[in-house]
Image 1 (cartoon, rainbow, N blue to C red):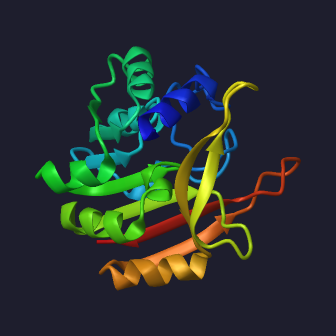
Image 2: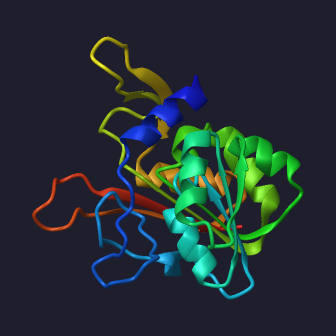
Length: 219
């Protein structure tokens, strides 16, 4: 079901633009809005770093990581998403794996200087399973960062997300995990992360009022 859901989502998600507002061919975007919010500096990536994208989708952010002279590794459960990433960023030098995030973290044996998720696996995986696995693979002092939509007031913990199909088909259901920023900080500290912060980035002027939750911590 999960693979089917994200393959369906891949067909609905528009392709990343050829260039951003600054004319760059690769860029990092934490939010759901174009040319908005911080960039890859959140991860503190240096040349030669090894960086993991959990739920890399069509590879736009990961291609920018590769352009920063880092080893760019991405995992996603959707074959359609990964094929799109391989087609668009064929020369980027990304390493892509079709697998579940927790399984990869548990079985790969590789360690990372930064691990991130942009509306990806960190939103759609039980944090009691994902965070310990990330903690094991994040090098000491490494950065974990993830972004997603803020929680709806009063709706916390495991929630249902819906991916629409045709009018004749029921929507596909996937689970997501929503918490207020203060609760994310507590959860990260409980799993051994340090210097955890969580904040909601406001939507850009003239857009909808839904901001973006951005969470960051050190291993």
